[in-house]
Every structure is written in structure tokens, then in C-alpha cells.
Amino acid sequence: MQTAILKINGMSCSGCAGTVSRVLKNIEGVQSAAVNLDAGNAQVEFDPALTGPDAFKTAIEDAGYDVV
Ligand SMILES: [Cu+2]
Image (cartoon, rainbow, N blue to C red; front, side):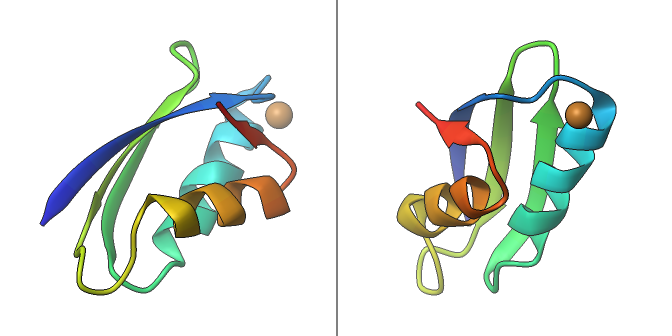
């Protein structure tokens, strides 16, 4: 497993954090996703053979948030 920390812009409430968490966990190969609303980031644990930060960025942007 590998861990990535993503900085996310646009999350304004716990609903946003929940959405981001859900889309990340829906990606095949993602083991866990911990979204911190106050810090505006997400810590993702994933299998690098199956997925990676590019897929996380795409999924988060599709959900309406920005990865910086
Ligand atoms: Cu919100």
C-alpha cells in the first residue's frame, strides 16, 4: 500500500468532505480515504498496482472540487 495526501479546494462543509471521501473510496484499489475538512486535504491509502493520484484527481474534479 502507498499513501498520498491531496490538497483539495472547494470543500465548505461536512457534506462536501463526505462526497470527496465517497468518490475516493469508490475507486478500485483505494483502501481508505480520510478527508480533513479543516485542513482541506485527503489522505488516501491505495494499491499502486491498481490506481494512483491521477485517478484521485480526476474523481475529485468530476465531483466538483479542485485538487491543487
Ligand atoms: Cu458542502
